[in-house]
Amino acid sequence: MALVNDIDFAVGEGAVRDLLDRSGISPSEVGRLHRVKDVRLYQGLAKVASIDEEGNAVEELQVKDMASVVLHPAWEDGPEWPVIQPGPAVKVSIPKIKPNTDTWKHGLILPDMQVGYYHGPDGELVSTHDERAIDLALQIIKKDNPSLIVLVGDNLDLPEFGRYRVSQAYSATTQAALNYTTELMWRIRQAAPNATIKWLAGNHEERLPNYIMDNAGAAFGLKQGKHPALPATESKYPVLSVPHLCHLDESDVEYLPGYPANEYWINERLKIIHGKFVKSRGSTSHKYLDTERVSVVYGHIHRIEDNHRTLDKWGGSSTIRAASPGCLAKCDGAVPSTKGGLDLYGRPLTVVEDWQQGIASVLYKDDGDHQFHYNNHPFIDYTVEFRGKIYEQEEPVR
Image (tube, rainbow, N blue to C red; front, side, top):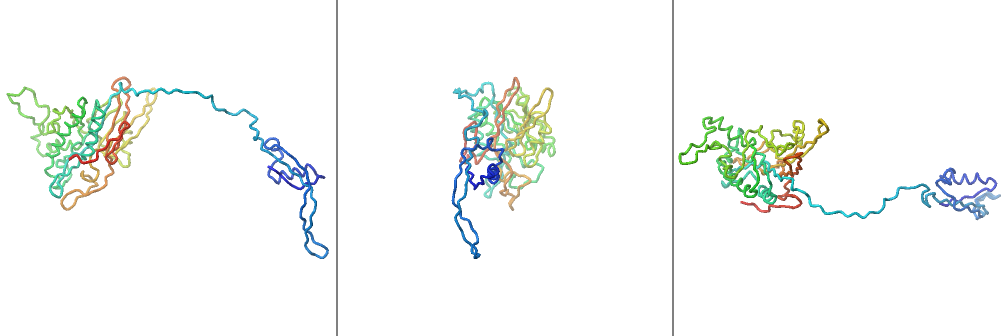
């Protein structure tokens, strides 16, 4: 930085101070923030305006004594104090470690399928469940070979047995729904031959026993008669029950009735329920976090949610989780709901439901500290990411 000014040598130091002041530099900064590199004294010519005797403006050249002070920043030569330096260079060899999953069991959670049908314009059956989404879930089951599969409930829609009015388009469709579900349970068993499979009854499965109790109480709980030529074993399920009608014994699927009290514990820290709360804008999970003291996975709402809460407890803290994997039903109004509407023939209108399709996976231990790691796997345009690989279902399966 060069500061230049005409200087009166008679005042000397004061002129230099004035020069610094006009340049915005305090004399106290010289030497601390600025260092004087050069001082020069020289003469130069300058035009000076004046008025002559006749009153005319004239300019004349005059010799002026000039001074030049050159300042450089004090940090130009580096700081005068020690500064933080990078640590020494270290060559690090990072070994490749294969994740240890030998002590972890694999579980898959399949949410609400709402298996059912209505009659289309030409009398054909149109599904309320999404067969493409279900087949995508079957791909994951076959690939993962889980040790546990939990169906969270509402696998059957059963609109004909509900307490709400349904149109004729949904009539005479229960048998087709039972046939599909029976086959589906066998397909799940074939995809995971060694898995434990649990089916939690949801509020839609409970429509069947409730309907029988309300309208044909004498038929409730009836089993097949004992045949003398058959082994003397009593039928496990009533004839008019979901597990009997869907041949769950033959597919080795355990049915857990008793909604909403029924539940399945994966380990001591994580349980699965169908669920009974429905809150808007992702707040259903917070309702469970307010009422539960362990982590819970739930269905019923057809939306993907996942939230956490840390609780104070004896000896420390505990973080619990409440999550919903979504659904495997259609999200276009086919499933009767409070948001849906019907045309003049009782067929559902297309409507955008705030529902999301997906499944969930969990790595868990059923001994020791009973740890688990839960993940939602949303279905996006019939594609899903699962353990680093993308799976897709492109064409309708039926």
